[in-house]
Image 1 (tube, rainbow, N blue to C red):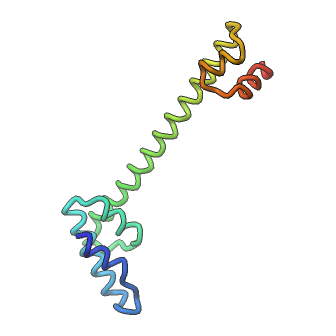
Image 2: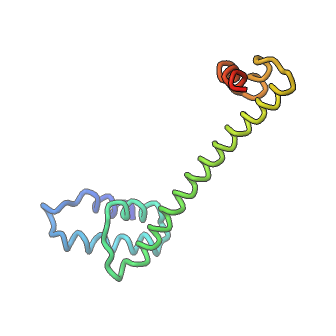
Length: 122
């Protein structure tokens, strides 16, 4: 399958008609879909914008892959934002309890200049 898709990516309109290239791409999309080769399906979908009826299912799966990828990126961004908020909450609590800026920095894993900015903002 990988060799077939490599050949597809090397093709251009100078060697084959656009219709023939579309036909080859559609066949490869179907093989990738039925063999559950999501990596190849994504690569083919990235270079394709065709919506013929007989490639509807592979294109539907391609859309699902894009949504899954977006959700995963969103989850990672959310986790990072949550970790950042937690560091600030810890720092604020430590500052409220009288810890020195150096101690707050060490415990919260925030830089000393940032801890000083938080203190100045209070």
